[in-house]
Length: 224
Image (cartoon, rainbow, N blue to C red; front, side, top):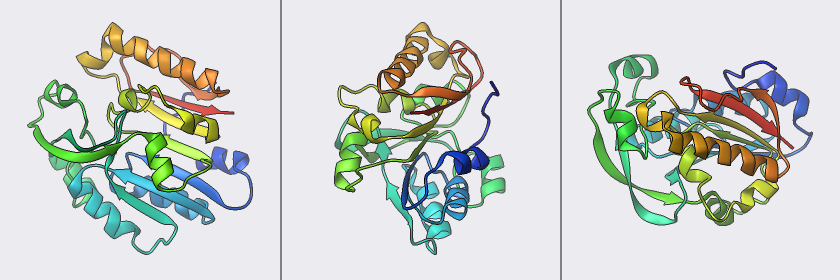
Protein backbone atom coordinates (compact mmCIF):
# COMPACT_ATOMS: atom_id res chain seq x y z
CA UNK A 1 0.00 0.00 0.00
CA UNK A 2 1.32 3.41 -0.93
CA UNK A 3 1.40 6.25 1.59
CA UNK A 4 -0.96 8.91 0.29
CA UNK A 5 0.64 12.34 0.22
CA UNK A 6 -1.61 14.65 -1.76
CA UNK A 7 -5.07 14.55 -3.27
CA UNK A 8 -4.74 11.96 -6.04
CA UNK A 9 -6.84 13.26 -8.93
CA UNK A 10 -6.02 10.19 -11.03
CA UNK A 11 -7.30 7.89 -8.29
CA UNK A 12 -10.45 9.98 -7.96
CA UNK A 13 -10.98 9.82 -11.74
CA UNK A 14 -10.96 6.03 -11.56
CA UNK A 15 -13.44 5.93 -8.69
CA UNK A 16 -15.86 8.82 -9.16
CA UNK A 17 -19.14 7.99 -10.90
CA UNK A 18 -20.46 9.90 -13.90
CA UNK A 19 -22.99 12.69 -13.50
CA UNK A 20 -23.38 15.42 -10.90
CA UNK A 21 -21.07 15.10 -7.91
CA UNK A 22 -20.81 16.77 -4.50
CA UNK A 23 -17.45 17.39 -2.83
CA UNK A 24 -16.83 18.93 0.61
CA UNK A 25 -13.42 20.56 1.16
CA UNK A 26 -12.87 21.10 4.90
CA UNK A 27 -9.91 23.40 5.34
CA UNK A 28 -9.87 24.93 1.87
CA UNK A 29 -7.13 27.48 2.74
CA UNK A 30 -6.76 29.76 -0.31
CA UNK A 31 -8.42 27.40 -2.77
CA UNK A 32 -5.64 25.70 -4.74
CA UNK A 33 -6.90 22.19 -4.03
CA UNK A 34 -10.51 23.26 -4.47
CA UNK A 35 -9.77 24.72 -7.89
CA UNK A 36 -7.76 21.65 -8.95
CA UNK A 37 -10.72 19.42 -8.09
CA UNK A 38 -13.13 21.74 -9.90
CA UNK A 39 -11.01 21.67 -13.06
CA UNK A 40 -10.73 17.87 -12.92
CA UNK A 41 -14.44 17.42 -12.15
CA UNK A 42 -16.33 20.33 -13.73
CA UNK A 43 -19.61 18.51 -13.01
CA UNK A 44 -18.94 18.62 -9.26
CA UNK A 45 -20.45 21.08 -6.81
CA UNK A 46 -17.72 21.80 -4.27
CA UNK A 47 -18.40 23.22 -0.81
CA UNK A 48 -15.14 24.90 0.28
CA UNK A 49 -14.94 25.68 4.00
CA UNK A 50 -12.35 28.03 5.51
CA UNK A 51 -12.45 29.66 8.95
CA UNK A 52 -9.59 32.18 8.74
CA UNK A 53 -10.94 35.55 7.47
CA UNK A 54 -7.80 36.49 5.50
CA UNK A 55 -7.53 33.08 3.84
CA UNK A 56 -11.27 33.04 3.17
CA UNK A 57 -11.08 36.39 1.38
CA UNK A 58 -8.38 35.01 -0.94
CA UNK A 59 -10.36 31.79 -1.42
CA UNK A 60 -13.43 33.81 -2.40
CA UNK A 61 -11.49 35.97 -4.86
CA UNK A 62 -9.74 33.01 -6.52
CA UNK A 63 -12.92 30.96 -6.96
CA UNK A 64 -15.37 33.71 -7.95
CA UNK A 65 -15.40 32.57 -11.60
CA UNK A 66 -16.15 28.95 -10.67
CA UNK A 67 -19.93 28.85 -10.41
CA UNK A 68 -19.96 25.33 -8.92
CA UNK A 69 -17.67 26.23 -6.02
CA UNK A 70 -19.59 27.42 -2.97
CA UNK A 71 -17.44 29.03 -0.27
CA UNK A 72 -18.31 29.06 3.43
CA UNK A 73 -16.63 31.26 6.05
CA UNK A 74 -16.84 29.07 9.13
CA UNK A 75 -15.36 26.10 10.98
CA UNK A 76 -16.73 22.59 11.18
CA UNK A 77 -16.51 21.09 14.64
CA UNK A 78 -18.58 19.06 17.13
CA UNK A 79 -20.90 21.94 18.01
CA UNK A 80 -23.34 24.39 16.47
CA UNK A 81 -22.49 27.86 17.72
CA UNK A 82 -22.23 31.41 16.43
CA UNK A 83 -18.96 32.10 18.25
CA UNK A 84 -16.12 29.65 18.72
CA UNK A 85 -12.52 30.49 19.58
CA UNK A 86 -10.24 30.05 16.57
CA UNK A 87 -6.50 30.64 16.71
CA UNK A 88 -4.53 32.16 13.84
CA UNK A 89 -0.93 33.05 13.17
CA UNK A 90 1.04 34.65 10.37
CA UNK A 91 3.88 33.01 8.51
CA UNK A 92 6.12 34.94 6.09
CA UNK A 93 6.94 31.89 3.96
CA UNK A 94 3.24 31.16 3.51
CA UNK A 95 2.55 34.79 2.61
CA UNK A 96 5.35 34.79 0.04
CA UNK A 97 4.11 31.54 -1.53
CA UNK A 98 0.36 32.10 -1.39
CA UNK A 99 0.03 35.87 -1.51
CA UNK A 100 -2.76 37.25 0.65
CA UNK A 101 -2.78 34.50 3.29
CA UNK A 102 -1.89 34.06 6.95
CA UNK A 103 -0.65 30.57 7.77
CA UNK A 104 -1.65 27.04 6.87
CA UNK A 105 -1.57 26.18 10.57
CA UNK A 106 -4.58 28.10 11.90
CA UNK A 107 -6.44 25.85 14.32
CA UNK A 108 -9.15 25.36 16.92
CA UNK A 109 -6.28 24.17 19.16
CA UNK A 110 -4.20 27.08 20.47
CA UNK A 111 -1.56 24.67 21.78
CA UNK A 112 -0.98 23.33 18.26
CA UNK A 113 0.38 26.76 17.32
CA UNK A 114 2.03 27.87 20.57
CA UNK A 115 4.04 24.63 20.82
CA UNK A 116 5.61 25.50 17.48
CA UNK A 117 6.66 28.96 18.68
CA UNK A 118 4.04 30.83 16.70
CA UNK A 119 2.63 34.22 17.70
CA UNK A 120 -1.00 33.31 18.18
CA UNK A 121 -4.02 35.58 17.90
CA UNK A 122 -7.50 34.39 18.90
CA UNK A 123 -10.63 35.35 17.00
CA UNK A 124 -14.17 34.00 17.01
CA UNK A 125 -15.84 32.19 14.14
CA UNK A 126 -19.13 30.47 13.47
CA UNK A 127 -19.03 26.67 13.76
CA UNK A 128 -21.32 23.80 12.82
CA UNK A 129 -21.30 20.05 13.00
CA UNK A 130 -21.06 18.37 9.60
CA UNK A 131 -24.60 17.03 10.02
CA UNK A 132 -25.90 20.56 10.57
CA UNK A 133 -23.84 21.89 7.66
CA UNK A 134 -25.38 19.26 5.38
CA UNK A 135 -28.88 20.11 6.58
CA UNK A 136 -28.42 23.87 6.10
CA UNK A 137 -26.95 23.42 2.62
CA UNK A 138 -29.36 20.65 1.57
CA UNK A 139 -26.57 18.16 0.95
CA UNK A 140 -28.02 14.68 0.61
CA UNK A 141 -24.98 12.87 -0.76
CA UNK A 142 -21.21 13.46 -0.57
CA UNK A 143 -19.08 11.75 -3.20
CA UNK A 144 -15.78 13.00 -1.79
CA UNK A 145 -14.75 14.73 1.45
CA UNK A 146 -11.34 16.25 2.06
CA UNK A 147 -10.44 16.88 5.72
CA UNK A 148 -7.28 18.94 6.25
CA UNK A 149 -8.05 21.39 9.04
CA UNK A 150 -5.02 21.60 11.35
CA UNK A 151 -6.28 19.46 14.22
CA UNK A 152 -9.99 20.22 13.84
CA UNK A 153 -10.37 16.67 12.49
CA UNK A 154 -10.37 15.53 16.12
CA UNK A 155 -13.34 17.81 16.85
CA UNK A 156 -15.33 17.01 13.71
CA UNK A 157 -15.60 13.30 14.46
CA UNK A 158 -15.95 13.72 18.24
CA UNK A 159 -19.72 13.92 18.02
CA UNK A 160 -22.68 11.79 18.96
CA UNK A 161 -24.15 12.53 15.52
CA UNK A 162 -22.18 11.49 12.46
CA UNK A 163 -25.04 10.76 10.08
CA UNK A 164 -23.09 12.43 7.27
CA UNK A 165 -20.91 9.30 7.15
CA UNK A 166 -23.94 7.37 5.92
CA UNK A 167 -24.15 9.59 2.83
CA UNK A 168 -20.40 9.90 2.15
CA UNK A 169 -18.57 7.67 -0.35
CA UNK A 170 -14.92 8.63 0.04
CA UNK A 171 -12.83 10.49 2.65
CA UNK A 172 -9.31 11.92 2.33
CA UNK A 173 -8.10 12.87 5.82
CA UNK A 174 -4.89 14.26 7.28
CA UNK A 175 -4.28 13.65 10.99
CA UNK A 176 -2.00 16.29 12.52
CA UNK A 177 0.57 14.73 14.85
CA UNK A 178 3.76 16.80 14.87
CA UNK A 179 3.37 18.56 18.24
CA UNK A 180 3.23 17.26 21.80
CA UNK A 181 -0.51 17.68 22.25
CA UNK A 182 -1.29 15.43 19.26
CA UNK A 183 1.40 12.85 20.13
CA UNK A 184 -0.26 12.13 23.49
CA UNK A 185 -2.02 8.85 24.23
CA UNK A 186 -5.31 10.77 24.29
CA UNK A 187 -4.99 11.80 20.65
CA UNK A 188 -3.57 8.44 19.52
CA UNK A 189 -6.77 6.99 21.00
CA UNK A 190 -8.82 9.58 19.13
CA UNK A 191 -7.20 8.58 15.84
CA UNK A 192 -8.00 4.94 16.54
CA UNK A 193 -11.58 5.88 17.45
CA UNK A 194 -11.98 7.80 14.17
CA UNK A 195 -10.62 4.85 12.18
CA UNK A 196 -13.04 2.56 14.02
CA UNK A 197 -15.87 4.98 13.24
CA UNK A 198 -15.03 4.84 9.54
CA UNK A 199 -15.00 1.04 9.61
CA UNK A 200 -18.32 0.99 11.45
CA UNK A 201 -19.86 3.05 8.64
CA UNK A 202 -18.58 0.68 5.96
CA UNK A 203 -15.39 2.46 4.86
CA UNK A 204 -12.22 0.59 3.92
CA UNK A 205 -8.73 2.07 3.88
CA UNK A 206 -7.57 2.13 0.25
CA UNK A 207 -4.40 4.20 0.70
CA UNK A 208 -2.32 5.73 3.45
CA UNK A 209 -0.65 5.07 6.76
CA UNK A 210 -2.04 2.88 9.56
CA UNK A 211 0.71 3.74 12.06
CA UNK A 212 -1.44 5.97 14.22
CA UNK A 213 1.41 6.66 16.66
CA UNK A 214 3.54 8.12 13.87
CA UNK A 215 5.11 11.49 14.70
CA UNK A 216 4.61 12.67 11.11
CA UNK A 217 1.27 13.86 9.79
CA UNK A 218 -0.80 10.83 8.79
CA UNK A 219 -2.78 10.85 5.56
CA UNK A 220 -5.42 8.23 4.82
CA UNK A 221 -7.92 7.61 2.02
CA UNK A 222 -11.10 5.71 2.91
CA UNK A 223 -13.80 4.46 0.56
CA UNK A 224 -17.00 2.45 0.79
